[in-house]
Amino acid sequence: MNDDILSRLETLRAGDLPVRGGRTMAYVYDCGLDGIEELAAAAAARFAGVNGLDMTAFPSVVALENDVVAWAKRLLRGAGQTAGTFTGGGTESCLLAVLTAREHARRTRGVNEPELVLPSTAHAAFHKAAQLFGLRPVVVPVDPMTYKVRSDDIAAAITDDTALVVVSAPSYAHGVIDPVADVAAEAARRGVLCHVDACIGGWHLGHLRLAGRELPAFDLSVPGVTSLSVDLHKYAYTAKGASVLLFRDAELRRYGWFAHASWPGCPVGSTTLQGTRSAAPLAAAWAVLERIGTDGYKDLAQRVHHATAALAAGIAAIDGIRLLARPEASLIALAAADPCVDPFVVGDEMRAMGWYLQPQPAFGGSPANLHLTVTAAAADEETVRLLLEALEKAVAAARALGPARVDPALVEAAARLDPDRLTAEDADLALELAGVGADGALPERMAPVLAVFQALPPRLGERLLAEVVGRLYNS
Image (tube, rainbow, N blue to C red; front, side, top):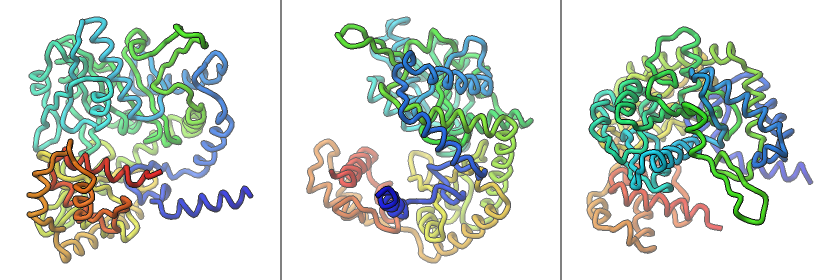
């Protein structure tokens, strides 16, 4: 019976992208070390039934979380009073940072209509937080050449209602580090909190610095930085979901906590958005941190650094594509240098050869491009060589095929649709023209779909995206 159930799960998994081997260059993080996955699974199994909601009933949760947070605090140069919380992932860390800032602004400054100031390159999680917690997002454009926000632009956007300013280290889309020190100084001058989103890069950059690399200032040692998020299930290579949210001090951290005793049940105190939560990801993270250790992470960070540099140089040498920005961490964005080369067609060709590069539609001053997250499993010379070889072939094939085309009449008709009043028939027609099936199923080649998506007004695209998700989750 058990074997049959597991076999059915394996059959389902056969249609997914591979999570090991370094060929899926988004969503997954593989250190390439033997035994790590097995250790994490064993640690998680031992704590699968432990409930992180009540630390008085399960003191092991406190011990593990204190150890994990202390590691992050040391790495990211928190001071003695720095305090942190283990969360279920980067989005939860970002949500809690915004919630904490909102409550801090309300209680200490009397702000009733809080604003969130953030670069146009900030992660979507912050817009989700603004929507959930009732903040008005104030989006600041970035430099069109460097894709970094300018501190003067942030300063101009700060008002008496600003609850939080956000910067990235690095930004997901382009892999560059915002001027954290300058922005944090402006925020501090105005008495506003400043959060560094180091979810994807903090662990990598922190250990790269320990290995002797010179890096822009980005962590809690920077004056004016009041909170920082760093994911462990990314470059700490732990099981999902595991993240740490660090605060300047324990007093600030408490603004994001929830406690309730005015009911007939047991008093509830929660440090995260979740109530009941399994301690399995925490135990798995603790075990992997112990196993790899500081020296191991320094080695992995240097390997990723060298591979990123080699890939960047190789991409720059391929006729027809270009780097959008000089990568400052482990993320690469490549765009077309030839109008005959469609990055999304390149992505389709790469996927046909067994590689996944994440498509990023054009937005603002950022053109259509492909995103690569470089992990340790992709950091050996042979994998780099094979990737660049496949990419050169994909570019040649994309040039021969030509860009995906969008019917101008479709774009004109779509521009007249109101996303807030979209009928089921409107959605059916728009998705059918985009190549999406009635059940939400996507075609094997995504370039035509992406070409339509990026040609639509953003709010309409978001509405249709929700429609696709709703059709996939149809139960």
